[in-house]
Length: 152
Image (cartoon, rainbow, N blue to C red; front, side, top):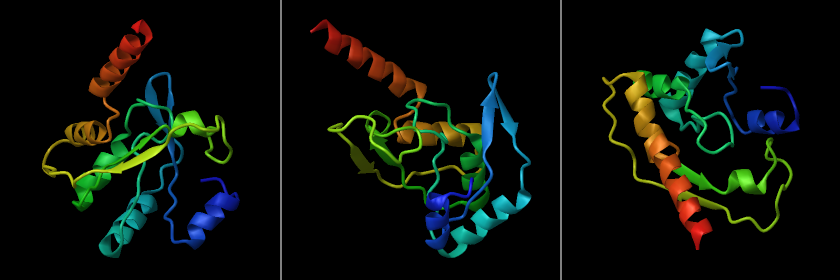
């Protein structure tokens, strides 16, 4: 993470920062993967809780990243999905300034997931993406809903 005031604030609050990957031409590119990142997360999960954003972006229906599923598979934590709706409409990409005032925002905490920790990371990621309503199934439902709304 870049060292700005928000990162410093999160660090003071006990955040564990990790290096990100990015997507280039459909593939994931790792920026100097640091194995200590995984160890930091494992240590944090021993006595605390960890918040992760499996998509790594506020853009709706962006593909999930396997790192979240890998962490879950490896550490076997209780996973509570949280659905954040309307964020991308209300805030800019960094989330620090309003893009559209008056946008409806909602946060929904769901029941903890029943995860087969012996399953593949791909299948675990699919369960996660479905639980936060960001899978392809929900994208199709959203498009259908939008089209139906436009027909009225």
